Length: 126
Image 1 (tube, one colour):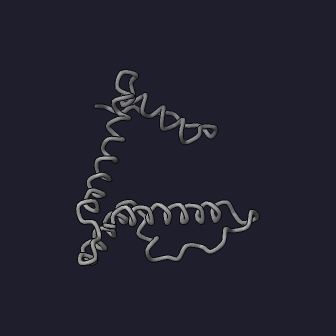
Image 2: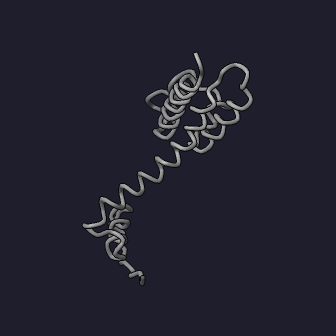
Image 3: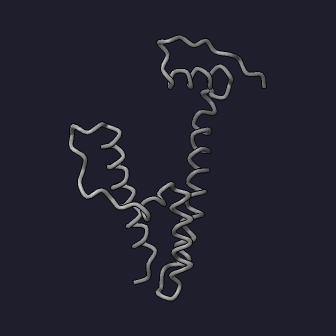
């Protein structure tokens, strides 16, 4: 398939450029748009579900800590959340005067830590 070039102006934003590129190169058509979206979601969910199923099969029972911990680290690394085990959660939120990037990073860390804690609790036998 031959790809067509698209013209770019200073007023264009990244999202518009991406859509125009997809449309011009026939990647995006009305009849396959929904299929494309579902395939993309299906692939990422399948990959994530396969890894998380490892933890469901190997729940922490007390005698298998090393295996469970190794599997947990694999899943968190795949999810780009391994840092949560290695970096303390900020004790306080940055002030509202702090740069947005700093506030967003803090919120992401807290959210990732909460999700990781829930994952850990869900994969332990009671």
